[in-house]
Image (cartoon, rainbow over all chains, first blue to last red; front, side):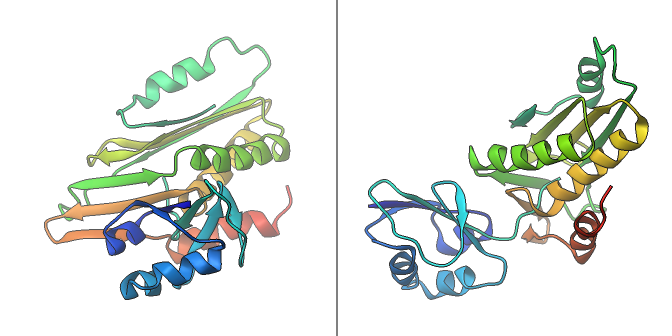
Amino acid sequence: MARVLLFGRLSDIAGWRSREVEAGSIAALRALLSEDEGLAEALAAPGVQVALDQAIVRGDAALSRGSEVAFLPPMSGG
Amino acid sequence: MITLTEQPFDPGALLTAFSRGRQETGAIATFTGLARAERGATTTLELEAYPGFTEKEIGKIAGEAMDRFSLDDFQIVHRIGAIAPGEAIVFVATAATHRRAAFEACDFLMDYLKSRAPFWKKESGPDGTRWIEPRAQDHADIARWETQET
């Protein structure tokens, strides 16, 4: 069971911010989330990064119990 | 020091506190960013952070600034939550022996915060809401630091 967090426009598109999902890898998690077509498109957009347990990861990675996966659209502060 | 706060802050009071008790610092530079009304198009700005991760990522770049510009100290205060036009969003202060390092480090930290720090910014107004993403200018601003060694 992994905790999934959506930030910025991603949470507006999905209609949720945080959810527990049963998935063994980030690829499997993406496949599950992609059942929502709007969210699938938003997750695949340029500049969306993924953090696993608060560290940026590129490509796939294994998830374990209690993993936290965050999808981060382009950032803008100040 | 890095602080994320939902409360309005007073940049002048922050500068006074940051400047106090320094014997060897010769220069302090500060930047204060304010929320703009965009001539009535924006009534509220909402800033979202990823608690823990946001502070950690800013901490990495602040550490880089400390080394690169030989800073004595720095302070970053960033608002999160709902912000009204005219309120301060961000305050950056840098302390160094000489002014050039203080100015440049402040500029460097702001360029980072605009386009790389984990914040998400939404504008609301009479015409609805929209998420703000870095502009081409913001990307060009940060690219200056990647090509240029000080």
